[in-house]
Image 1: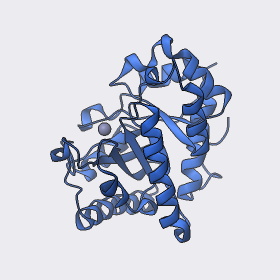
Image 2 (image 1 turned 180 degrees about the horizontal axis):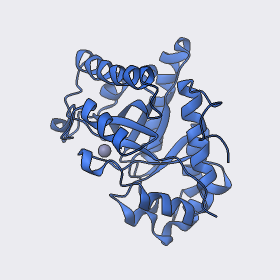
Image 3 (image 1 turned 60 degrees about the vertical axis):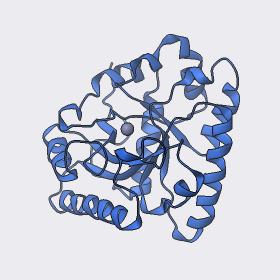
Image 4 (image 1 turned 90 degrees about the horizontal axis):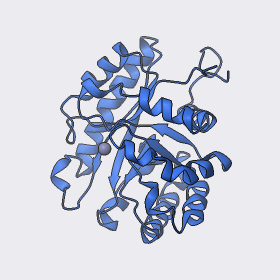
Length: 255
Ligand SMILES: [Zn+2]
C-alpha cells in the first residue's frame, strides 16, 4: 500500500534571482496546487554566474526575508495548511568571504549547489564551523541540503567520507526532477547508504516559474522505488521542529 507522503517542493526561485514570479505569486499558486511545504531558495553567488541573483547585500536580503515573512504571516492568519520556508541556494563556486556573510540563523533552510569532490567537503565544513560559531547564541540553525547533487562524483571512491559528512551535519539529499539521471541505478549504492544511515531526503523541483511548482510526482515515485519514505519523514520532522509547527492537529503525523 502506498503511504501518504507530504507534497513538498523545497527548491523554488523567485524574481529575487532568476525566477519569473514574485514570492507572493509563488505562494498563491502553491496554495492552489495543494502543496504542504515549499521553500523559496534564491541564488546566493559571487561566482561567474553572479548576475543570476539580486541578493548581494544585507538590505536586499532583508527585503527578501521580509517578503517571505509577510507570506508566512498571511498563511498562518488564514489557517492554511501550506507552510513556506525561508531558504537560500548557495553556489559553492563563490568566494569563501562572500558565503561567510550569510547569517544562517535568519534562514530555515540552506541549499548548496556544486558539491563535486572531497576538497569541496573541506571547504563547506570550514564554512559550517564558522557559521556555528556565529550562530551560537541565536538558538537557531537552518536545515542544510544539497541541491541537484550528483552522487556519481563519489560512488567510485570517497562514498564513506561523503556519507559521514552528510550524517555529521544532518544534510539532506534532494530529489530534483530537472536532473533525473542522478536517480539512475548506477547510483543505487548511494541510495542504499542513505537508507541504512537515516540521512534525510527531500524533493526540490528547482522551479523557475509557477507552472513547474508541483512537478513532484516523479521524485515521489523514486523515493518509493528506493524505499526512502522514512528518510523523507525524517526531514519533515526536522522542518517542523525547526519551525515550531504543531504536530497534534493535522494528518501529516506518522502514519
Ligand atoms: Zn536552483
